[in-house]
Length: 318
Image 1: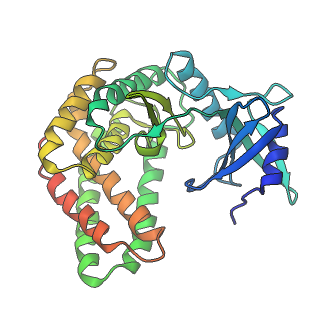
Image 2 (image 1 turned 90 degrees about the vertical axis):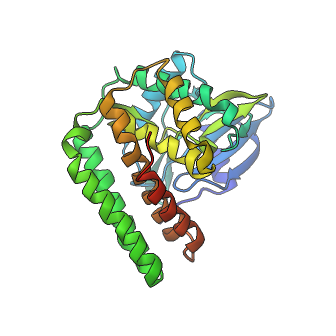
């Protein structure tokens, strides 16, 4: 069961980091962890995150902190983390005899990037390349074989749940997409396992990129950081730009993204050849998760859009 701290509890948790809040507001759009905007008496603003029990291990959270600090040291716009009164970036809060981990970071002001912000693609892509270049040297927490297999198992579980909530016609079309993706993954498995890998963000788009005065000022939410192929991470991000933009601009979006990404890190031929499959995998996983399993009722129109998107992407020349 999820634990959402009350405002009074959040105030006490902030005290672990030496902060005395005068205003606290819960951030409503978090899917997994509980987060709060906090303002102190000096009008400084922070974000407090409380990790849900069993969502992340202490080792994974410490790794997330290590990655955030390492990327921030390179000049990337990553929020600054604050230490507890004991000198640790990781705080602990007990509720009903259960310990929850927590972190506090600066709040970066800005608006969330939109799919129509195509003028920002060069900056977004170059920052993406820089993250991958820097994290290439970072010691991964888990091997790519294990984490990729875990991701496939997650997609299978989400699909098994989603298929029960769809009408028969949509279900048949959705199943064909799943079967075709599974076939492609098996066919290219050896190539995928050999792709350059490292720590990746997995959600580098949408609400995790902040913009102010037409400049990227914040890259947020590294709580999904894991060791996977860099090309998979690029595919995840490209999906968002393509799904919410017309097919007429797809070639421009992809070419602009890859051209600017490669200013920081060159892509191999196999990485480029794998992108379409990774985009399709992202599309299918999020169709299950966001359009079927999370809503009370399946969003059939969006599921059908995802099916149509897959059909177009399966023949799209990157």
